Image (cartoon, rainbow, N blue to C red; front, side):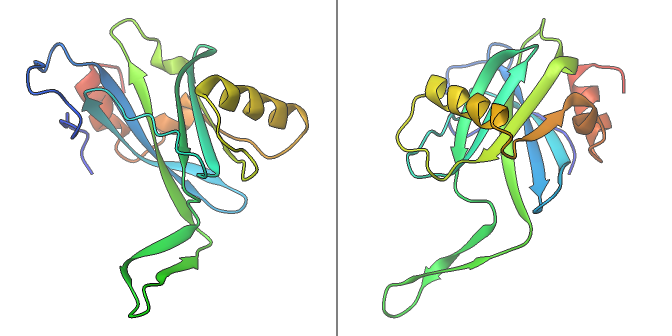
Length: 172
């Protein structure tokens, strides 16, 4: 996949390409014990911030210790079908590999080398604001529960980082 500037579905038609913010969309492959960045792309527009109640997986993106994005995801290990059976049931299966795509807003003065993405499965987290999610994630980390961490070094190891760096005019 080449890094290119994409126009997301939620971009306003009156926004010009130079006025819209940019963000990195970081695809992270997960297994029971590992996490690695499999692709990164530069996108223009405002990233969605899904905080749907009932989605157990959370991601918190920080730049230099400042939270810039919080999102919730369906369990990435559960594969859902797009078809239903004759009885109306939704089909699903559990996989040993999952993937989430985390959006990290970047600006002209942002030091992207200070990006950190934290991911955790928090199935007991009910309705929560972004601040409550961040607080719950920190409490989970302090108690020694698994919190997956993605650093900028891991983002740079993505197979297509050179393309994203070129778009951002960064050294590769």
